[in-house]
Image (cartoon, rainbow, N blue to C red; front, side, top):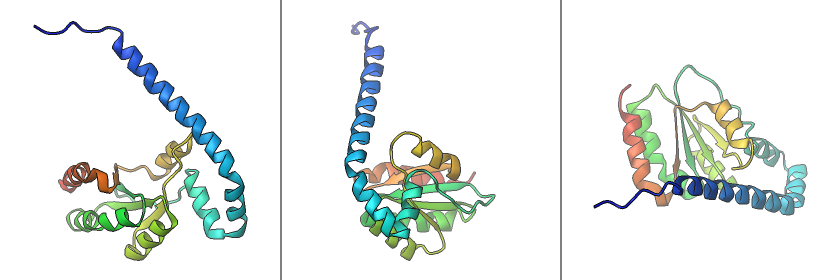
Length: 166
């Protein structure tokens, strides 16, 4: 015997999801405002930080080619280093792809530029408001995947999917 279906659970889940996202957005704005004096100070003194800040606002510029774009995100140095194998395999199996690497931290950005000087490296956009959508509109990836130490199995699955021929 099966349990009766609850007709009210889907709207409740939708409401809970919307409420959680609204709370996240409010907390993000408060944290951003509290941290803004530090951001303004760094922005005024460091040209590299200004460029990175623009990218974090979703103003990512990439060299467009006719190839499909794969966007690989490594949060910091460890994840960028861990993604090197995936990047190497993609380059070998699918040289037709344009690979864009993003990272969240300045050190991760430096390591990605150093380890992959021929690939486009950008800062990941802030997860707030229009910034992610703006970045996606500019990069237009065929695939996008985060590479973190906690998500190795899903990353391996995505890598296998990308390695398949069209």
